[in-house]
Length: 365
Ligand SMILES: Cc1ncc(COP(=O)(O)O)c(C=O)c1O
Image (tube, rainbow, N blue to C red; front, top):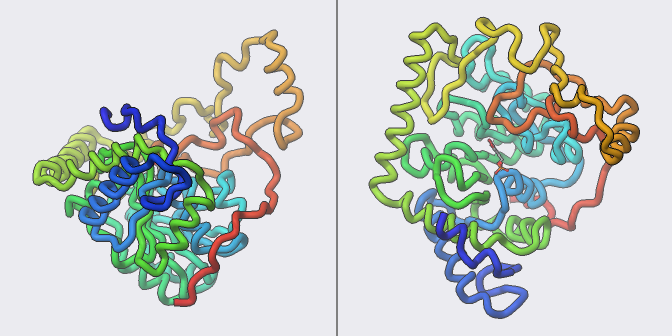
């Protein structure tokens, strides 16, 4: 928090260490190099970019670096634990790429690896995305990599949630297996807020160009300082103990919830999170009507005289009724970001193709 709240927030440092667009960036260079070196030590990656402002932007950098608009992505469905930035229709990824989703097995709650492989063979994706928002079990990176290799697809492993567990050896690492590994830096790794991309040297230049100038301007140097500090802490034996306790505590929580009669998705956990299946005990979740519709928030039924609100109501974005898109089925996981159906301000604009920043073409290696 001290590093993130430091005066580095005032310093613009567009570019990379030793190659900035302005002078006076010596300390920014030191900070960023520290974050990169420590990340390499923690996760064993050949190349690390610590500039993405968030986990979603880390994913965006990979898509820009490796794909062309219209390419095909196969990822886990949001309602099965995936993330918006893996290709939800309301997200830029769903808008610019052709996306299909694989699912978890209804019975076991585990990723349906066989189904994924079969779907990959039929869909022939350019990229398969693994790593999830709401998935309590160890991910089998090798199985997903082998499904990707079988159809000559790239593999992006998004370890946003489990960065800390992977760094501490509590969860197997996809580094060295997947082509790209992305992550948030503020979840289980408990470092400065933001994202990062890890990849092999062959993708280094394309990823760096995708981050800047491809999609960002100045890096948030205070957050990068927070990443450097958090990564240093994560290199200590204390962090390993902490990560081990996180998993033990989650297991204990799972056990207690089970004892109290809740159904757990997959029956338990290998990670930091526990998913309870509330459908049997709470058939009508709070905020929904018994027919599965979202209840209007109490405040929106109160008449308002605010002209700006009236104007917005009479010209709702992209929809004749102004109502949010209807639910696709199932409830998005609590950690998977805001529900597009729950948000009255979620845009329902029509899909359009836009020009992306020029990006290096996909490698043939
Ligand atoms: C799997 C996954 N990827 C990406 C993200 C996005 O991270 P951010 O909120 O930093 O954009 C999340 C957020 O929870 C996530 O769970």
